[in-house]
Image (cartoon, rainbow, N blue to C red; front, side, top):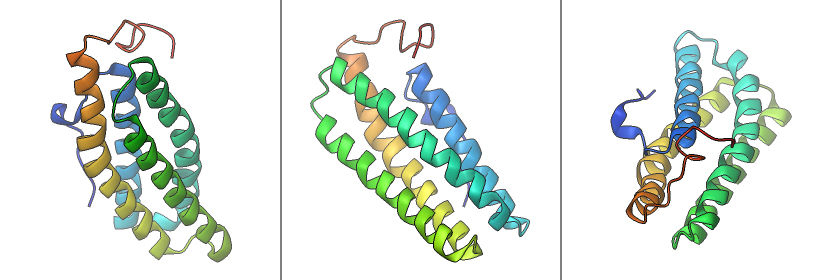
Length: 146
C-alpha cells in the first residue's frame, strides 16, 4: 500500500516537493509499521505530523495560488479543506477509541489516496500553471525564505 517517491511525482517547486517527500516518508513509515504489527504505536506520531503538515503545507500552497492568481484555487482549497476534515475525523476517532489497528489502516489508505489524487493531479496542475506563466521566483525554487 505504500508508495515510492520518484521524479515523476515532483511538481518542480522545491519547497512543495520537499514537503511532499516528507509526507511520502511518513506514509511509508506507517505502512511499514503496520506490516510489522506496530501501526498502532505509529498512529499518534503520524496524526501529530499530519495536523502540523496541513497547516504549513496548505498555507504555502495557498500563498502561491494567491500570488500567482491561480484560476483553480477555489477547487484546490476545497480539496485541502476536505482532507483537513478527514484528518481531524480520524484523529477524533483515535482520541475516542484509542489507537486501534483499523484506524492505522484507514489513515494509511486515506494518505495513499491523497498522494495519488491530490499530489499527482491537483498539485501538478498548480505547478504547471506557475511554470507556464513563468511565475516561479527564487523564493519557490528553494533558495528563499518560506
